[in-house]
Amino acid sequence: MAYMNHDEPYNDDYLQDILSSVKTIAMVGASPDKTKFSYGVLRVLHETGYDMIPINPRPGLEDIRGLKVYPDLAAIDRPVDMVQVFRKPEDLYGIAEEAIAIDAKVLWGQIGVFNLDAARLAEDAGLKVVMNRCPKIELFRPFWKPRLDLKI
Image (cartoon, rainbow, N blue to C red; front, side):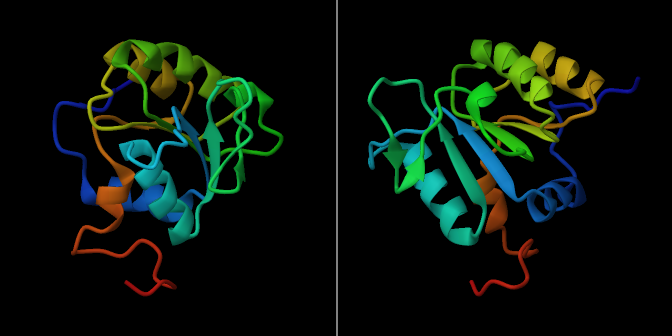
């Protein structure tokens, strides 16, 4: 199998295809803290129209921005298109295993989240993989609009 070179910039069409086709995004490492980057990304993706599912195992944490929080991917009660990861790079392999187990289509590692072993595992299972990128930033790149029904 030919693996994607994750050290090279991703093709614009590849990113556009992912962001325009996924609808449900599980965010591993979602935070209720409004000062955290993950909170801002969750807010923008939710406001853009994605069905966001926050994942955080913290006891007693029931919702973030009115969205039900799940302790892990296995607990989610509906299909997930993309698993977005706000965790340490070394955590990505285990999360890739969980993403495969729930039949996710995409594994997306946030800026700073890069693990080639996890990428290979996910790609071998048929998932598209993006690492070290932020979907919020990619959504608002000036040369394309993935959700043409939305005003910018």
